[in-house]
Length: 421
Ligand code: F0G
Image (tube, rainbow, N blue to C red; front, side, top):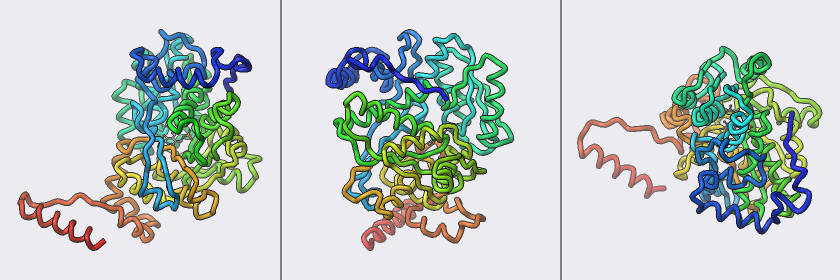
């Protein structure tokens, strides 16, 4: 796997600038009228590969918000909890930050076609950036195993979209052959330019924390590129003198798609344990993650950990994040579910500052949310009896006759039950 390094940083720093000048420059660019300054990725261009400005494909990605989650903090058992919401990117997921760099590189290098295998978000993002940059795009997705809204995005943005009768890992295998035989540029997360763009989330987060590292950063784990990118960013920030120590980076996987957890627990990180992945959090339904070695290094270097969470725990956490008026897709909610476990184990202390990386927007998987609130998510599955714990979060839509009294009676009943609470 390729990784981009920057020998020019040795002295006197990126673009010959010290940390104080860079911090100032990056902040000032937020009020600039230049298009590449308005991107939350390209405003950090001193720490990115050099790409001529006229080749840059941007949809004004990055610059995503940090939200405090007071109710989730209480439910997890910490005093203060923050979410860095990467679902607030233009196509609704963190993939845009990496895609702007890798798609721009593809254009600069003269490619006409780009391609990816995806669980839905990479494909949505790639299709959008290809369309903006005048490139053709090819998407391979597992048939029936991604959310409809993600599939609809890649259709809308004009990609050739193939639903293969296999899982994500099978799509990767097919695509790896295709790119050997045709001049198609591979935009899966093994692409080192994507990792560079995805680094910026950590620079931006630290800027939002006034360059005081939080104690913990918690990331969902699928193909494990995002945790690798965040780790690389923090390592570089330490090297450059932006921060003096790393936050602990912990990776959370779904119990049914837990190759990294098993690799660490069963082989001490020596050898990947691939799994046949199964989870309703389809974005992270990945059994053979490409970037496992990089993620392992990040966890070790930062003294973080790995944890796995059940389908019920994911659904409950997603409901809780939604009830804060924020919302996210199921794969992102593993972070809160994992945090609860890490607090119980004493790995995260109540007084520590924790940031969850929310990777996808709530509308990315509206079907999951509807099934959750209607109480249908686990019907007919072995988990049905355990799913009662979700009832406190469920708000099914109510079908009524079109009468004023019927509506008023409902509101009064709701008010009475609140008072009792
Ligand atoms: N969260 C969401 C919403 C994702 O879409 C993904 C990955 C992840 C977390 C995991 O990130 O792979 O870097 O560990 N989605 C990819 C895709 C695989 O094709 O959209 P990772």
